[in-house]
Length: 360
Image (cartoon, rainbow, N blue to C red; front, side, top):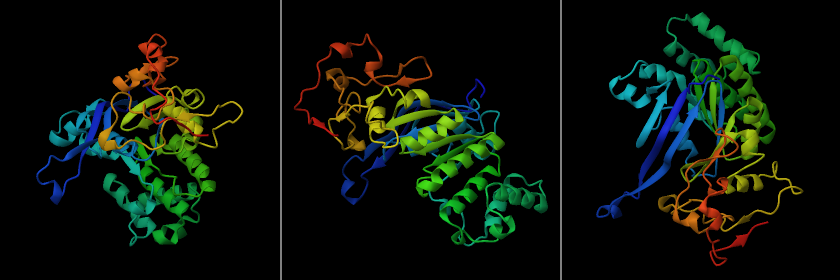
């Protein structure tokens, strides 16, 4: 992993308009900020897992990182080149077409990227022909058959001549993965890429992704709502976990820090809610004020997690925390409790009347 980031997000926000329709002709449409002021660097051959509940903004952030979603504000850079400046007016030394090839995606539903009316060979051949026009048909097909065999789709000639509906879900996902890898991208967004698979196949698929990462020297943004899956793939690759909550990255760092020593109460809650990671003997009951996630259209003032947080105090309701280092700069958190000298420690605790509940 080099010192220079492969992709950098600098104070990136993404807003969407909601509530537009016939009944809203005389009212101002609401703006929902799906991603709010996120800065994150992604490096060569690195795996970063984005974790959080549904609706937290992790998919939007991932799509923004690979240049699919235009940010409302902030910048996204590929090897120092502003991605959207390259697209809009050709500014910079790296053409947008090269950026587009370098930043790719595999979906939760592999069939969405495979034409149901095309044989597997055709679906795999078309992107290779587009991006590598100098290769002959025989050279392209040799690469395709070799990779099909490598991922266990053997005999390759048999699988290459099937249609997507003739493959299982796991086989479709393998085809979708190698379809992306055949054009040699530098960063792949895997958006819930294993969540539709049976539990028995998830570890097998993650192991395959990491094996192919070593071969193709690519990076992954691995999106998951399951902290155990995020732990597995980042632990095996030496990667990082970034925890998102209502558009903010609230904690980011090495897996050994974030999972084994979570600093943000929301990360602690995710671990508490993950049976594979929760240890009854060492972890105490985790108190939450509320189970329900606040409406993204109306995010709470101050720390966004404070209405649900068992550690919240009055200062958490009044002001939003910035990023604080935890055991060095590699591990950061958006929680006042990481600063031993912060006024948080003298601030009044929220009253028991503030919808206090304990879930055990």
